[in-house]
Length: 198
Image (cartoon, rainbow, N blue to C red):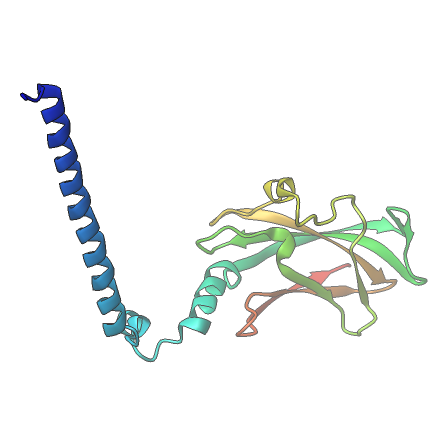
């Protein structure tokens, strides 16, 4: 009995499909075995040492590189001080102290953006009780689960100057104080700016 052309075409297509399936399966098995051989051969190979040198401490150096770009490069340019008084957002200053707003101009000389509110800037007097730092409630508490919080954070782009505002209580009769910026967590590099109240 003579077979129809459609039946023969189906047989040919099925054979082609089986042939391609066998070829694909062989390629997959060959690749898996090659990866297995490569893993066994290079399991103990020190790629970081080969790329960066065998004395490269990539655990600490990577942090240091990041800190150099982001934290070691901010520079205090100048600051202005404004007397607020005894009351700030419903809070009363300690006896013998008044609230001040300290606006600090910061230049970002690094290659990455900075988050000004996260810079480690503090005010210091000659005595431990000359300055008290204040963090008044502004209604903008950190909400780590809210993506809009991150979207609305202030950033200071590379090679730009921005402003950071601090609220402090200063002792009555204080002649001046120091603004101290910690620029590196690891090296202890700091910058100090002397502020006169006279």
